[in-house]
Length: 357
Image (cartoon, rainbow, N blue to C red):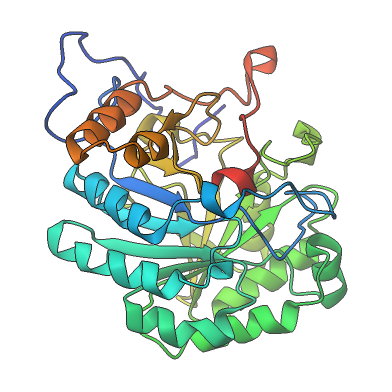
């Protein structure tokens, strides 16, 4: 795949010397990538049934005793932060379905004193009108709200829920809390569903509201396994649609490990980003790992293998043993996903809602 026009051609990603040690120092994989970003799924349950994610009847949810407890989440996060993780995002499923979510945030927020720079949440937003005050008070610093269309009927078509008004009310509630910033709105773009009118309307939202709008290419993480390359609406195509309406300028000095390439409207009216894992993979600078709701460490969104942290922890493993397990898993982190490599690509061992976004 060709790089973005503003990016130099990527240098090949090579494994570091085999004698390099990975049992001390910053958390690093065998390709030399520092791991600074951890996404923690706190539940696999969801109150939406998005067509690109799961069937209408839902999935077989994990039993309550299979899911990490608040104490276990706090303990593992402390270990990860001690190893150099600087950003934590709480995901699901739908994380706001956990009644102890504000307490989880309150337990993790003090880790800012030991290296945690960002504590964020990804949510569908439906429960934010009620939860935002508690989340802000607990110490949440950033948020991503999923929103694929501003059209009431089409919102129901994609989510199978009549909840657009509640999501918009949740976004409005966030505007009252300056400590939660930025407010990012994420739209999954699917060819055959996402129309030019949807793209323009969502981009317009970023022009009149204090939100960073981001468009995400559809990835092969649906539970029913129906993904096809023909359903991918490339980010470059979306950007061209927006640019034709409102000219865009790429922001300078962006973090190379970021999943998004962000642009500012030329008239200064806001920002819009593009997350293009299919057409412009960003694996070579990936600094992310994931912890599933049942305590499995995944070093890539598309991993086939997982490392069990929950069972050793519940069996009495101390923090040093957990650190060894984490370091060993991270050292074996995949070089890249293989979505564009035909038969070489293997689908992830779980769907997105089971992994955590």
